[in-house]
Image (cartoon, rainbow, N blue to C red; front, side, top):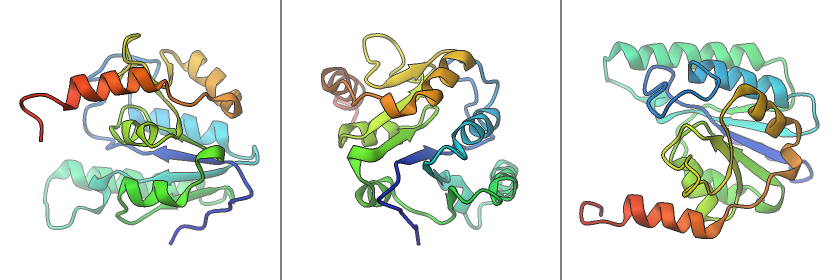
Length: 187
């Protein structure tokens, strides 16, 4: 169960698979998503926020013998152990759909952060403020519907002023969703 404190501003971070698609959209100052996740959590702790880290679905795969899944699980456990001492960091350590967690959060005081997951598109679409890497499918100027970074310094600036994150640009978001998901090959 997730313990959400409605009186505090919340930062929801989507963790990524640590073994898959590290730089597929280019370089943004981080060589891998493990470095990005550590940097993110470190710069948001002890600032009065409730930080919730949602694990990637790979972390709960059972019966699949791929080494990459086992490495993901091991690294995820190490991340949890590293930040267990912080009272303001909570990990969602069980399978939970994006829709389920977003329904529990208040759009007016929650910011969603991701490197490049489609979960950020879903969060923005239902009205959450979002921050993501410019090295993502929506990172170019035409589609950039949320706050983005392209270097560690730019990202650090966004994290330092996270309270001033803007709501998504609806027209850019709709352009992205239409162009990427609404075509002859989509459901």
